[in-house]
Length: 289
Ligand SMILES: NC(=O)c1ccc[n+]([C@@H]2O[C@H](COP(=O)([O-])OP(=O)(O)OC[C@H]3O[C@@H](n4cnc5c(N)ncnc54)[C@H](OP(=O)(O)O)[C@@H]3O)[C@@H](O)[C@H]2O)c1
Image (cartoon, rainbow, N blue to C red; front, top):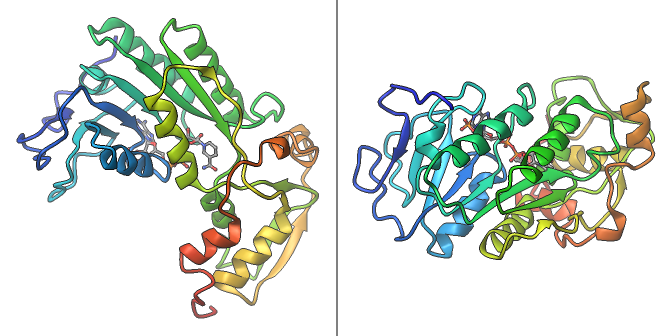
């Protein structure tokens, strides 16, 4: 049992309440955990476009002035705060919350435990995971794999979609180093980045369908070297930086070099990395810094 916070912002704030939603769609809501994140906010937008009632989960209070037509659940899956109220009465959960420093397995246990202990008749739990979590021995991946296991053994109706890295993350790997004189990349490693909007499309499609267990992986349209992707990012946003490939030791990086995180046979994404750079203002030519 998780402990609901006594904070007045905790729990689901519905239409007309302090969190004023401006007229949410009728019906039991879809709870989007991580609904403020890169992927989750795109899932939220697509569900609203389809006239679905939506509840956004975030650790934060609803921002003042947010009049979007969704409910808001202030909840911390790591601390076990606000979970019971967040899951109360939902139809479907699309679980996009994650934290690189936290424990996604424990978060999944708390979330699923709260559903089982509630009166909520959950129709569908959809989880987004990562291609190769069973092949690349990274701590974060181990916890994602364990979270999948928790879901599989929960007895709840579920679907799991594993995808490759998002374009956003691959671009960030270069731009976060923009203050350095050179930009480091992983030597011998390729990525197959996918558009997070296309992943959101797929998750919404899956959420509306019947629970299907683990479905076919989703990969981006191209497999390209980390060096090539960093060069494209720098050319688009930063320029005048040398790319320096680094060969890192350890089993995890060996598994990356072996392509354990790729799904070339599932290159179903359509939007390329260059499409992403163009859409986010990159190739429009930001001034060089
Ligand atoms: N990024 C990729 O390349 C990639 C590839 C494949 C799969 N995935 C998976 O896709 C999912 C979404 O990734 P993303 O890149 O969109 O993540 P993100 O942008 O980092 O967003 C993380 C979300 O998790 C929420 N969150 C963090 N800690 C929380 C906590 N303790 N309790 C409740 N909510 C919490 C955050 O909400 P607040 O900050 O508002 O609390 C935020 O909305 C993750 O499961 C990830 O493993 C990502």
